[in-house]
Length: 226
Image (cartoon, rainbow, N blue to C red; front, top):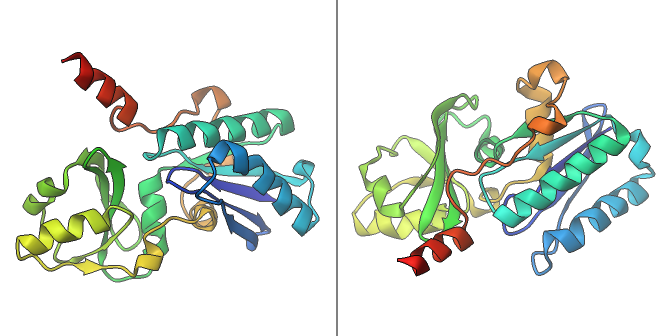
């Protein structure tokens, strides 16, 4: 059995699969912090599905970019469980996770995630999820210089992009809002279909969040010193 965890956004989700079949998927309550809901949600999934932690053979994790606190909680939970159960951990960044909901569309996929502080995390993928541009942080105004007319746009940052683009007279193709937010079950699709280092996993000492820029707290602290 494989457990998937995503705590990269302002909410979280988990999923379980058995023999490549999805058996459980759930979101966390966005009004409560990840630290208070992640393990109870995992425990509830095991209980409802009749599994025990010892039934796990691996964990798939979203490592960011995204919520700094959420990423740390997800990573520490995955590390703790993997160490205790002696199972591997596999990782994907949250931008390809966002793109995975649109697999099968015959357009390039442009993922835009709300990075706070008036910035976006962005990346571009082909229809088969080949990375066309590496993840980075930009402002919504920076995207006026990008040619996105042949892309389908998705992610929590799409709502920040849209008014900037419309004000400039640029019309883009946006995915349905229901697809803007990642699901842990899509991590399972990535695990089943993308290269995961021959399913050997990543050494626990090498597991680290993907931070593209400083946290909001770090930026504000630096600004106060000026």
